[in-house]
Length: 436
Image (cartoon, rainbow, N blue to C red; front, side, top):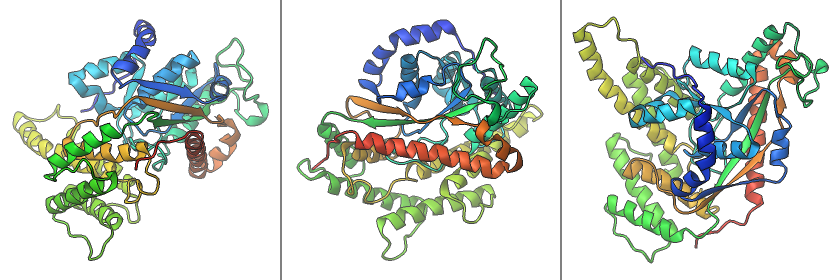
């Protein structure tokens, strides 16, 4: 049974981390630095002392560390929501650090009541802002967003309902002064609301990383049984690796692409084949017309439900039988991760705009698939950070009370639109390095 991991904020650890974090970014994260866009901190600081959920895009496994670096610049500490499984990494050592740094767990896609209750409490109390990545998965793609989950908006509206009960007065935009600082009481009725703060994180390589990319291609070619040609251009080498990988996966999943199918059509059909095959094994009926990411979440929830069900009432034999089946079910996570890894990549993604970053994103996916583990950092990185306009939920609260689903969708769309716009703006503001 997956137990809830609550936040155990330890001020000393936060202080110590704040002092030593630049060294951590340099030595552990491949000399990563952050660059906050002009005016971004000023927009963020308008919410100083206010209740807010921060919603950045989630393109990289180091996003939480980047957000911690941002918190140093904003002179605030945040709480974070993290997937429950990451608390068990490194035999639980990772979880200890996360909890004492202000993180708490959520079982993705499930009705995790303890996690939801903690989220609502943190938002209502307003002692710290809360960071939640609304994509729900690491996209590993800097330029675009995966479809956002509705949880960020839903949880924030639930918290606003709780806040209204705590205050004992009706929350409405007409009574509020959205960006006026709160008075001495943390629950001052005037201006009482909850905000959602969209943010954009864009990972860039400001220096030439072509030699590192060539080494990565060489390693991947070796693992795939391809003869490396260091003098060959980047694109055909990458394409050859992808072709060989598809052949291997076709055999693994007993799949045959339609005659004349393009690589895009081949990859998409293979993804759906994997999902449908897994759904059959788990005896799950996937909703017709569902997006692939939604199917992944449904299937992952089914696996989680089985693996982490309460075994207290089991006999020794029943537990043994459950453990045998659990080993099989755990193998299905690899299938789902494989689908997610290639869910937003397509043939032409690199060739239409062959920047270092785009090429690195594709090779990182291949490293995960072919080499296993986490991909390498290709060189010193600079993460560009921008802050959007805060979304005052009290403005939408009356609509939420009468049309919950539609209002949640509207706010979720606004979060996505702001993040997408900022990502484009960040890309337009720089001079990328293109590969020959």
